[in-house]
Structures are given as structure tokens and as C-alpha cells.
Length: 619
Image (cartoon, rainbow, N blue to C red):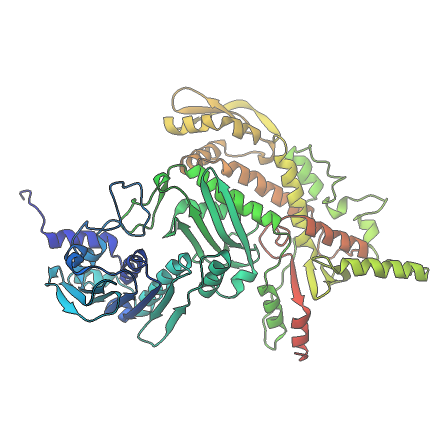
């Protein structure tokens, strides 16, 4: 077949295959156009999941009548000057409207502030109609009917009406979070309406908009993020570790106000929460990255959902570091939803869930500790030592835990002193220990709440954090291999590993170049014991290629530390004295991340006095 020029309609339909994936894509493009026009009010109406009708109306600046024909021509835009690297608007490619018009029936009615009348233009499957007068208020209304009627094969790939409507709602919510000063309304055929009233651009206003989208529970369970590194600013909120979701759909990320779905950002969020969340749970996040447009490429794909950073390591490090620092400084906080779950458990017919610690048959913590070769940590003197490593002199030793009762007080002065100390403890985050029930749960009282602590889960986190601090405060002990292990790699991977050799050596992995496309491994971390060196090195090479980090090795060492902490923590069934329980509570308050155990489960639940009174009908 000879080479020939494709028709304009076919070119637009090819472009539509990339830009217009489903009705939600149409809504995204039209709402972004409205926001670029300075709209303060955006109304969306759909029918048939967006396949029958999509109408987007705004009160923006409008399109002059003489420019309507250009608005539906390919690669015509008012948002881009001569520098493709200086993109400060949501849209800039000039492809959306002609692409939509090539596969649907499109009409645009618009009026500017300086015009007495509105004007309208239409496209029907690529056929453009003449501009004609119309009646309208200031702003623009774009109506799309019979989406994909010109390419019926695409209809076979559409999901049901409910699924398409849900995708449209998600797009609107995702955009609305970035523009709190704009009022959004979404109406569907089932008379259900999503209304997001305008707030303002202040941090408080942004959080109110986030609450509109993500629910009223999020602000009460959120930690503010505000960090800057080398000209890149990160702001937003992340959830406390005990407030999670089963999927990552409520992780919102924005780059210069643009909603994105970026693998690097998603991976950084996972890395930041790796120590505090279960593998099957996800944090709730809203993060805004602001940086010079010249150091980020948003022109990666026509849908503009992907971005490429000039320095991905900088961005990833900023996100991971800022979130971890925020979690560490947030103090000990439990999710407010824990109390709701507890109250639900008291209702008739509620299902109970048991959370038990490991069986007592686990090998001792001390044995695991010694096997690791990690001798730089003074375990016996650590306040986070395992409770079975005390001595006859007292502490958490087995012999000292036989009786819970601390014995009778011998004088009124002693009783008064204890009452005064307890009164002081009531003002702390976890309060004063009052009892231990079922040999595992510590019941504590604060001034306005009751706290229930899982002693095994809590002490497991304390031991783990102490191990990590000792682990990363000095070089990790390594063991010399009898014969160096030679790992064949591509030249690029070998070079990347060599560049990170100093960091790897700090974690106990000694490598050096061994000719072209190979590295020799001479030492491995003692904590790993016998390990698959070939697979470890290849995994590290892949991670460095993707993220320019060596977190794979660090995560393996942290996982061993977590296992050691689990085996060495106080067991369920151990009786604790009142002073021991209070000591555990105080250590929890002073330890970052102690609201969850190493596996991501909550270590305590707080029930407010008002909730208790409600249970008994007092409120």
C-alpha cells in the first residue's frame, strides 16, 4: 500500500484513542479547561455513565466568537507560549476538544465578559458546523452527546453505567482537592448530586475541601506535611498509621496543582509507611509538590497523568523523609475510628475479633540477637529490653511478675503520694495504668478517656525501634565470604552498584567492580545469615535503576530486626506490676510510631468518656 496522508478526522480519532479513554477522561479535560479559564464555579451533568451525555458549565473568561473555530482545531491553544518547559496550566496540548469532537457530538457555547451575545459551534463525528449566535451567561458550556458513536468498537470496552459514573466522580473529586476556592457540582440521572462548596486557598481551607472529598474522619486522623529541599516544596496531609484503607485509591498526589498518578510518588509513600503499616493496608494521603516547571516534564503522555522529574531521587527522598519526620514528631496518636469500632463491638450481634501475640514457643530474643552478630547494642541496659531478660534485682524478670498486687500501703502519707502521682499521670497521652485484664491488655485512665493497650504489640514496637536506632547508628557487622561471589550484570547496573558501594558497605555488603559487567561480593551482612547473594545484588541493581536508592538491603535488615523484636517482646499472659505498666506507657509516649506494632496493627485504643456515657444512655 502506498504512503498517503491521513485525513484530519482519522488523525483526530487516533489522538482520541490516547486522550479519551472513557467518559471520565472527557470530564477531566473539560473541567481542566474550565479551571484554566479562571472559573469559580463548575457544574457537571452526566447521563448513561457519561456515554449519553456530559455537560460541563463554568463561569470562566469564555471564548471569543472569532476564536471558537480555532478552539476545536488540533494543536491550537491559548495556554502555551514558545517554551514547552514553562507549563503553568492544566492543559496545553490543544488536542482534547478536536479529539472529543471526532468520536462524539460536541457543542461549545461561550460568552466573554466584553461580549453582548454568546456564540456556539458544533462538531458531529469530525464534521464542523458554522459558528452561530446563542444565548448564554458569561462563561462556557460544553456538551458532549453519544460518546464513541463514530468509533462503536470502543463501546465494547466500556464498563457498566455505575462503574463509569463512579470513575467520573473520582476524577471530579481528585481535581476539586487541588482547587478549594472553586465550587463543584456533579449531577447524574439517578438524581444524586455531589456538591463541593468553595472554601479558600489557606491550609485550613484546603483541609476543609479534603474533608468534603475524603470524609469528616480524615482531618481528625491527619498529620500535616510541610518540607522544602533544593527548591522543591512538599505540603499536604497524611493519615496516622492506624488510619488506613484496603487500597491506594485515597492517595492523592499533585504536581504544581496537576493531579497525577506517578509510580515514583506512590513508591515513596509506601517506603515512608513501610515500618508502620501491614502489607495489605494503605495510608490515606494528600500531597502537593511545588517546583520549577523546568525541572519536571508533564508532557510524557497525552492524558497528562504521568510526570517525569529531572531529579527523581531528590523528590523521593523529600517525600520519604518528610513523612517519616512528621510521623516521628506527631507523638503517639490513635485513629479516632478505633473508638467507633469498639462501640460497635458492644452492640448486640457484633462480631468480635481477637488479636493475639505469638505463641510462647518462639525462640528467645537473646538467642536471635546473638545469632545476628549485632553486638553493639547493650541489650541488658536498654529500657526497651525484652521482659524476660531481667535479673533477680527486679524489673521485667519472670520471677518478679508472679503477683500483680503491689502490696498494701503502710501509711496515709504513702497513699497520698501515690494519689498525687496518679493524678499527674492522668494528664499524659496514655494516662495512668489502672489494671491488667486477660494477662495481655493494660487498662489506663486519662482525664477524659479510657485507654486499652495491647502489651505485647506495644513492647514489640519499642524493642524494634531500639534495635533500628542501634542498627543504623553504626556500620552493620558483616561476615567475610570464603570465596567472593561474582555476579554478572549489565555494564550500567554494575556501574550503578559501584557508585553506591560506600552506602552498601555501611549496611554490611562489600562489593567491588570485577571486570566489565560484573561485581564481586566479598562481605554480606551478618544479620542475613545464609542468603542468596546473586538475587540480593540483582534486586539492588533494579532498585537503583528505578529509584536511585538501596532501600532493598535496608528493608531486609529492618525485617530481621522486626522478627527479633517480635520474638523478644513481652508475651501475652505475663502479669505486670502497676509500675511496670506505667513504665511501658511512658516509653510508648516517647517512642515514634508506637501507635502501631511492627505488623501495622494498633497497639492501643482510646475511648472518650463521652463515648462511654453514650453507651450507658447518659447522652
